[in-house]
Length: 166
Image (cartoon, rainbow, N blue to C red; front, side, top):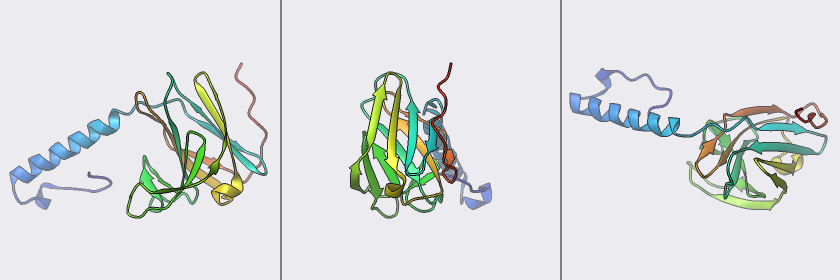
């Protein structure tokens, strides 16, 4: 895949390689644009916990939240614009245990999850995420695959729960 690279025809030995490269680029662009964007997830923190709400349509069989606690894409599991150090999937918190992008996670604990029609709210202790002052995260659900935009959450200011929408 071609990410963040300036590529010119001079990088290729012949026209056949240019055509193959453009085909690969088109395929990766199509794959990225095929992911539907879900409504923006929300996050807020109090002195001990981080609270995240994920909105979706349908009834997904799984919901994932990739959490980048050091906000560095180069560390952790690289996916959808974050370097996930933690994963929450269906109420279980996992810590990344892989290298070089391998899918390897170690179970940490169960987290509080409250599913309802169209949303799932969860609570995870800040200490279980390494007590970061800020995180980036992205959410993902299946059926069909839905991925949120990257959310940057500042956890240094403790807040109360946001008021419900009217």
